[in-house]
Length: 125
Image (cartoon, rainbow, N blue to C red; front, side, top):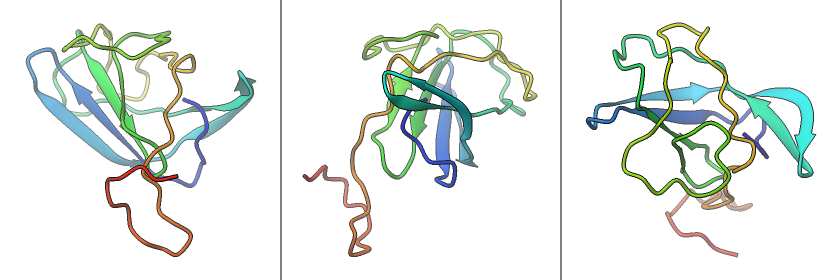
């Protein structure tokens, strides 16, 4: 993931091919100390807990400063337009495989303004 802050909580939703989903709230990104295309690279480590699916998964990542992005393959370089996902071999603990989403970073979006207004669902300049 790129262009995050380590103090901003992430929401990660894992979706199985049959539509079952589980959302993990309040995850924290760890700075890897590397950059790619002039963006800092961050890592989130998590397990699936009691989510019983391990293959044909897609992952949706969102933080308060970015639009939600769907990832369906490791190494993804553009919008993933298929309904399901191709991610697999995920586990219930934090030893799940590491997927590379750095080639398609989160996109800036609906941010909280300087005046403290909450997000309104509209991307404004």
